Image (cartoon, rainbow, N blue to C red; front, side, top):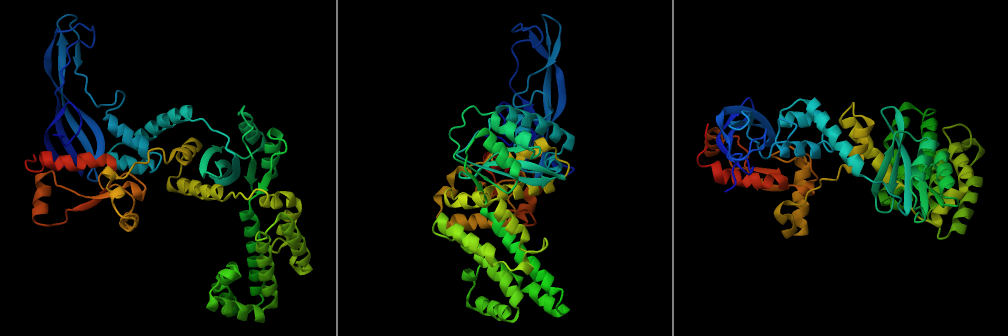
Length: 482
């Protein structure tokens, strides 16, 4: 039967809690036959025990240390002494191999300081292991060219970083330290097979277009409509803000509270919303003009054909009044963009792709950066590219056996409580966790459970913890040691 350690060759002899962590005393029962110094077989004998402390992956929300009763040996042939080789232990760290694996998996999801707290080690140890792991991942990772390439940037640590994605399959491809044309061009030049690329989605940063067309002459370039409609919304909002300054303070506050009505498409408003909006616009003609210009710009993208869109664009440009063409807080920036990027804007109707996924990924990158200040660029890049590398399947397929409604409720509950494993404290997607009963393993925990005090009965765990979670109680719940 599997024991509390669930490590082949190891036999736990005692379990206790000490300073908020589990301490497991254990023997390694596999004895060596050959001398580790000279290699001669059958000439070694026991030379006294030695206690060594190893860190293990956390269980039940606590750090775990193993007090290993290792056996020393002496060789009759060469006279050398050595400690028995210990299975399941990392060769370069005072940790189990699965503890190192836990750190490697979680370093792409959680902060280094929090991982160190969960394991019970120094955060420098986590940084070292994470750095080595990321180097291995980078050596194995090979970027590729998708059919539809998305290029955008996000500001991290005061510097704009270029992010490259597959916009159709919604997959990150790479993250570059900056967005300069030479760097982007060099990245595109690394690929020998370039014939599969059909188009490029970008924001209005000309070096992206120039870099792509220097490598892919004649490649269709599409300016993401998200950026343009965002500019239309901003222009309308800036005009509302400017006009509000000339109103009484209470009127300005009322406009601010109701600004959501202006930002929504008219066709998406309910009857009450349309009534309130119309009352506002009837009394404020300048706000009404800005709103209708915004709506008319959205209508360009609703055109059935490229020719119709071009006609609507020309009509829209002519309809902007002179008073709303002056200054940055007007439609002037949008007019400039639609003039300079007209061809790329209308290319959307030939190739209706969006850079929305890349924009979403920019937000993810910023969240990653905020969650752990001080990350190097290499760590940020790895978390963005490899963050889903260790995604686990639902435990034992239990989620697969449930109805869609049951799964939805389960996932919603886990998300509400936080998507952390209740045993190892690791970060997971909600769908990777499952609810299970937590059996006690020490006398104190059994006593608290018997008295129905404070000890949690149900937790959400990952599939890795599942085996240990259920075999611990079976092996040690009835006769725990103190």
